Length: 99
Image (cartoon, rainbow, N blue to C red; front, top):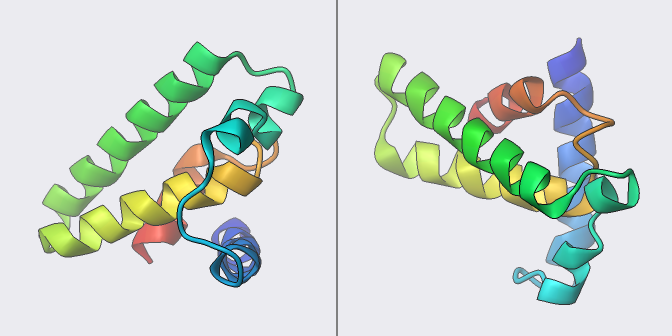
């Protein structure tokens, strides 16, 4: 159920972004929802790196193609450009990205 909720939120975030642009300006990343929720820049980067590693590990265990894994990593980073790490569990979000 949580994965389905994250998937719906991701779809809404994607639709919001796809209408405007694919590249998120650095000013927006510096003022991300996670930062506004009190997560420091280094902590946010660490969470992103760890979650991307988790996606890669899952991809290997599931014998997924590299393209699938890279797209999932892109979705994850785009999702957390508009959502906070405090609001959505990053491992559930990673699973939704691979789904």
